[in-house]
Amino acid sequence: MSGDLSRVLEHFYEIYTWTDDISSEEGWRRFNRELEWFRKLVRHKWVDDVIGSKDRIVVVDLCGGGGFGGIGLAKVLTESRGVDVDLIVVDLRRKALEKALENSRRILGFEAKTVYADVTRLYKMQPRLRADIALLHGLTTPHFDPWNMIRLAASTAKILQENGVFVVDEVDRVYKVFYQIGYKEVLTESTGDRVVLGIHLGYDPRRGVFKRLVYDLETNEKARLDAYFWNIAGVAAILWVFFRDVDFVELGSSIRGSILAKTPRNNIDPVVFEEDPSILSQQ
Image (cartoon, rainbow, N blue to C red; front, side, top):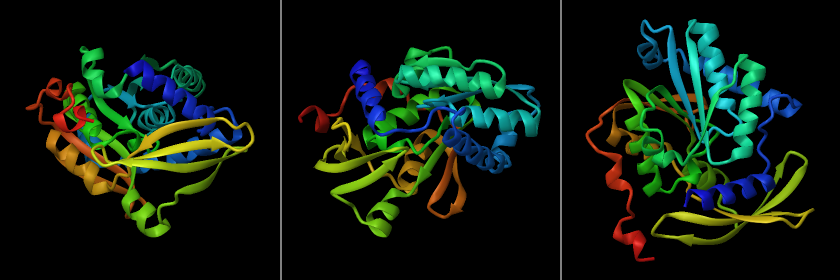
C-alpha cells in the first residue's frame, strides 16, 4: 500500500510543482516566509514547556518533503532558544527526502535524518522513535481523509514524549473553498512556470474525498489524487481525542495558522485502527 501511494505522490508532485529547493529564488522566498511564521509560533507557552531545561530536543517533520518546515523550525529554535535540534524528516517521496538532505546541509550545517515511511504507521515502522515536537507543515492535511487523519493522530501521539506537542499547519478549507471561493469543477492553477488544470472527477461519500485530476496543458501529463477539505475545528477535534489539550495560533487571519496539540493521552493503541471499518471494506 505504501509503495502504491508513494508512486502516486511522486507522480502528482512532478506535475503539481511544489518548491523543495531552498537554493532557488522561489524556494528561498518561501523559506524566509516560513521562518517568520516559526518565530511567532515558538513564543507559544507549550513550546516553552517542551524545551524546559533541555539543551537538545527531537523534531520530526511529518510529510516533510524537502524539509522546509522542520529545517525552519530547527533554525528558529536554535537561534532564539539556544537549543540544539535533532531533525527527522519523514515522507513517502524519495526525491523529496534527497532534497531535504541538501537543504538541511545548506541551512543547518548538518544532514537531517530522513525516513521513508507512511506517517500513519510511523509508530510501527520506527518503534524506538520518541520526539519532543511533531510537525505537519505545508498545508498537507488534504492528503488525509478522516479515517487516515485518526490514524495519523494516533500514530503521532504514540511517538511523542509525555509533554510533546504536535503542530499542524492548516487553513479552513470549508470556509475558504466553499464560501469565499466556491468549489470549481475545473480550476486553472499556476505552479512555478507551469499551468495545470485541476478537474473534478467525482466524490466518495464514505471517505468524504473529492476525486481530482491534475492535467499539465503543455506536456499532457496527468495524475489523480483524492483530497479532503478540512476545517480547523475538524482537525482540532480529532487531535483532542488523542491529546489532552489543543490550541490555535493565527497566521494573519482567523482561518489560517497552526493547530497545536499537547500531551498525548496514550490511552488508545494505534494498532486498533490498522484495519478498515466495515463502511470502507464494503466499497
